[in-house]
Length: 334
Image 1 (cartoon, rainbow, N blue to C red):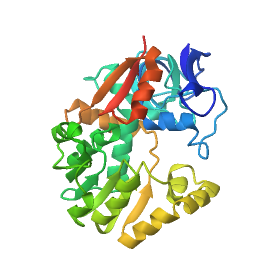
Image 2: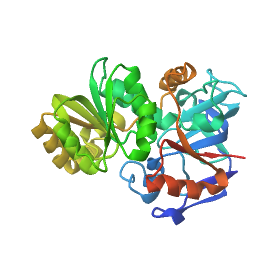
Image 3: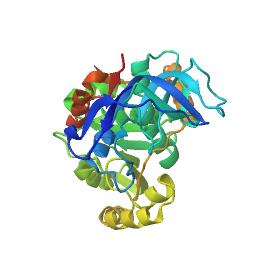
């Protein structure tokens, strides 16, 4: 089968399309003919070696974290799916493999595709939508009537986060460029801050929660606009000890490393009277079922910026890496 394989850490030339043996499903696995796969910043960060403290698989390694496709075989212990089912999934972090013509997925990580989506659109959902749902519902505990600040609302996670926060009943403010403003307003955002010309610190301490998708200076400024006792969840900045304990299997050594590297940002949060948390989302077929229902009911739109053929995946990755994408980028298999 054709697959996009990481052969060495570093720049774009460290990964290439090549032939690999097809995967063999385990007892709880679905063997999926991949019809489309979504691209995410984590893909090029993994290629660059920035996640080696967390994940260090043996190379060569098939990249890719989310997919949509058709089940072509099932393991002996599979009960929820059968051959011919159309599914979408965020594959396990230590397994990956979505950038290939075939992939294995634990049945607990998969869900039936929404009936109103094609494969390319469905492949854009799992990682970004699960991240937004788990951050807003589980970590931030967003409730009706609260005010939420989401940085970078026009990106892949941001487009889902705006809609999920509105579904939870929140008032949503986000940052976007002029090009992204029309998009985020169409998704229900109440207020848009043009990050190229406006200073978010002038908004005052008016937000009950913050969801950081940008990191850097934007995150630093977000501490100044949160109410005392508020919480910020980030997927773009610095991991902290709870990341290792709650999201990465209770790895104490990793928690100690994250404690050291996050000293500055945690001190900044304490000075502002704000709680800071870095989130690594987890695959969940149950959560995907909920998202599928929202999509089928027309309560959650999937925004796809560009679709590329699988043979052009290096070009697609470069576009994601450029930071210009509005919504998700997808590759489709022939």
